[in-house]
Image 1 (cartoon, one colour):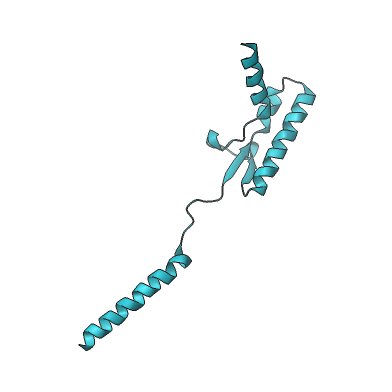
Image 2: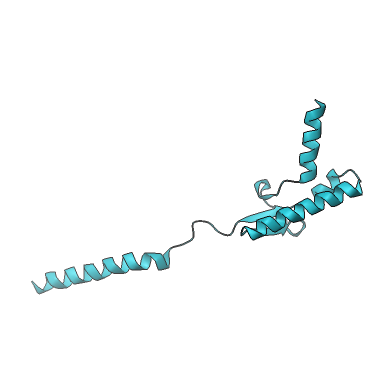
Length: 105
């Protein structure tokens, strides 16, 4: 009878420890979100127009600031060796080029 009582007590202690300790041992589902800013795309897409290039840089800087405020780590692509393309912040210059081409067609 004593063994049954000790076994039940140990089981209860372990169950409480598992329930209470779950929050302490919980692992994040995902890590810190990352965004990559590619200034070279703006420079090449601006077609040597300094005003368009500067406007593109300003838009990318504004996007990077918004992403950083939302909790993203924003990295310049020139500091990376390789990265998946879905991490890259869309270039405003390329978006304008696509819109212009769509209007022309």
